[in-house]
View 1 (cartoon, rainbow, N blue to C red):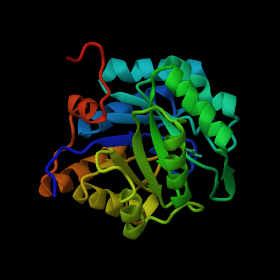
View 2 (tube, protein in one colour):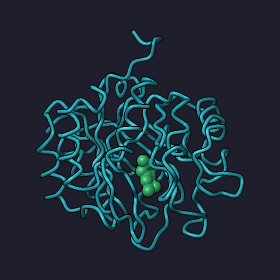
View 3 (tube, rainbow, N blue to C red):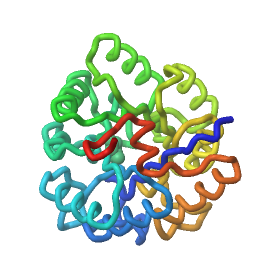
View 4 (tube, protein in one colour):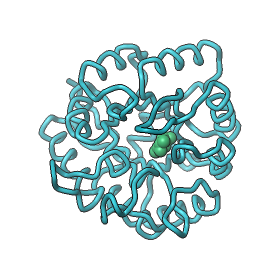
Length: 277
Ligand code: KMH
Ligand code: ZN
């Protein structure tokens, strides 16, 4: 087992939940920024960002992404990874709008799927448009792989040159409509990657903690936060994103893997800033 630092990505709020699901969900720009800061101090170095409008509804408005970005970066230093998934049903032009702000990273979902009772649409042309916009703006994609076929699509797209050369991979397991969060699924997906490829696992709901522990043992990285899971344990809501992160940091320490600092994360992903040497 490796003792390399592991990267924690925190998806602080997502687009599918509301305060009705948990009163602890950060929704306003100030709440999102505070929760991001707490997550970073707990060990996260990447913030996967969705934002909400004045009514608390998910939005891909560029002005809100810009102001939330400023609020977060005034409080702490981290890599911002904008969502291009938005909420289910968000039209493609809106999904791409915040990319004009040139964040370090952004998500790129690799196929259409059922998403609970809805359809999360990512046709070939949608994937190629978003990937092209990222390449144009120098943004590193995180490929979101929810299903085995999306791994085949990724390999096909790579062979055709449809994706930027450098990317990170996120296996998102446990969405109803995608692959289940069992360990065999994680292992079979991971075995198809180039051994040098960086990868994260996102376990949805009850899969968050066990999949994160397995990823840590397998040399991978983890995503931990409210977008994917709002419970600390069965029947007990987590109070903050940081509470969930602190637990995985504790467990990983016992397993010999420290949480990566921001500069370690940048180095592992090959995501440099001009100020870095
Ligand atoms: N809200 C989901 C339908 C992403 O951020 O790119 C899509 C999602 C993925 O959250
Ligand atoms: Zn997301």
